[in-house]
Amino acid sequence: MTRHGSILVLAFASCIALHAQDDDAEGYLRIGRDPYRNENYLKAAEYFQEAVNAAPQNASAHLYLGTAYSMAYQTSPNAAGSAMARKAVASFQRVLELSPGNTVALASLGSLAYAQAHQFEATEPGREAGLRDAEARFEKAIAASPRDAVSLYFLGVIESELAELVRKPAMAKAGFDVYYGVHPIGSKAVRTDLQTRVAPLYRSAMAHVARALEIEPQFADALFCLGRLTVLLADLSDTAADYKRQTRGVQALFDKALAILKTGAEADTPTHPELSSSEMRIKPAIVLPSGPPPPPPPGM
Picture 1 (cartoon, rainbow, N blue to C red):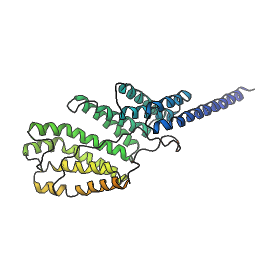
Picture 2 (cartoon, rainbow, N blue to C red; picture 1 turned 120 degrees about the horizontal axis):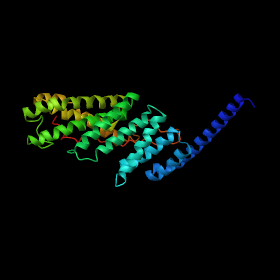
Picture 3 (tube, one colour; picture 1 turned 30 degrees about the vertical axis):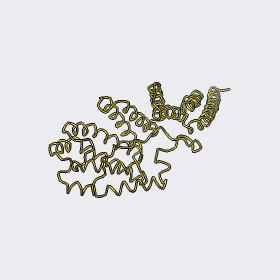
Picture 4 (cartoon, rainbow, N blue to C red; picture 1 turned 180 degrees about the vertical axis):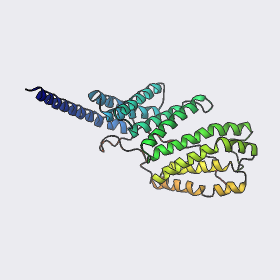
């Protein structure tokens, strides 16, 4: 056999071996589907790890493994949570090595960073640092997939939470209750301060959430969030007339969100594309945040 013929034989044998590895990996991914759907994420991770072992170059196998560890961490963080989070990060980073720009891995890293930020109290520096990390990761996810409604929503929520880290201490220092009964804020000095420091964050957050709603009009969480942000921004108005004008459509947003939830129209929450093949039907590692805590309903 010529040298060229030997190379072709080896290449063919290598392709057969790789195909067999992928078949084995696909089998383990299928077996892991049921425990994953039953929210037994660590059991699912055992099967997904076998898939990774069978096909180390298979990006989908690493994606499933990272997803299982991330969901285990996000839904029930405990003493072992840090280890699960580290394993999830390692898996998602491996996905990006094998499949640069993978939008599911990018968004899942953002969701995980957001969850990790909430290990810290709002008064601890780790909360802001974690939110900034999550913000940067979601910006990358949106750059890779501009119509990703969930990542846009996350980015809006993160910006609103960063604003709240400023607003709440400022309100408390001035002697206001965090959720007061007077609209707008009854101190010009406080309003002026917050207009400079948090109003830009609220506007940016509202723009991101509004964009998510353009893509997914039935996104109930985003409707609630946009309503809350509208009220928080309006509370920085200088007059009651401005406050009333800015919040005129808020109740309609809340009502629409409640109607969507009541009819079950959002039973399948908008999310990223399914992982791997259509038969898997396993969602990526996204636990939706609920948005900023609501102030009292505005007086209409």
